[in-house]
Image 1: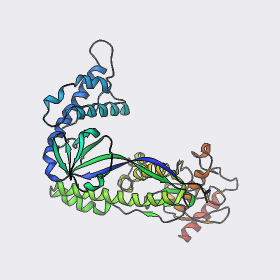
Image 2: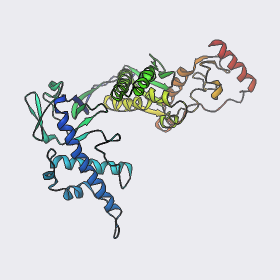
Image 3: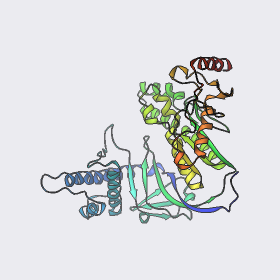
Length: 389
């Protein structure tokens, strides 16, 4: 059990996502087209400055773009200068992030159009009764009472693939950091079971997308594009809800959390792509990282090498190996005789690595194979594991 200490208060940023009522969709769609025009101008101007026909190149900053777009709000009917400045700042941030002289242009029409996006400054959005005032337009949102007594930062209006608009506002809240009741846990990521902790309840693979894949295919064959998009959104929301429930329970219960470093980007190039994307490993890690940071937990990304093979009792590498032995879910250690579940044993090894010092967190404890390991013992172990399964 961790040592008792006084709870601390930390200031964290949360994003309120409120759905906009449909009466403002037409105005927001038109404003999004103007935002795309401002983005494309910044993109083209920045590329010309970075790759000039003659003379030295120059990387334009947000301040330079603001000077070049001074007075441009007179050419637009809906967006104002503050919105254009936010577009320029966001463009420069993404250009530095991706390290490119030119980003993708935002298309306003056609099948490949960009989803609507309208950035805003805090001073642009004002409360007026039950509605909000933005650029001279009254916009109503659902659950407007969540904005009572809230001071927001720079946010945006964003559009989803179905055409619905949402108001996203970052707000600062006070979070009390209390010590967790239990010390550490390890989490092994997989496909048959999305997440297996070293102790506690598993997160089973619910097939959020694969379960409704036939319905999506039928909607696409009937050319019901909106129905297919609605089914995709349902699968994404179910996946997000399940992962939120699991990660919240883990962060509330354990002080140190170790999770495997399995790469979704590499596995999506294999035949397991649909199952990997349906599991949501990247979303799970992201939620653990930011929830653990806000709650004062230690979240460690552990190298998964040999975590399945190593015995959690004696640390001997006597477990099943290779693609042919993936069907072995329960195995017997050839050294100590312990019976292990494949995923639970890997989670225990990840927990052991997470408990170690920072210099050892990228390694798995006890990776060296004992000299007594022999092919005959391996065959006996695998046969015993299949019999136990």
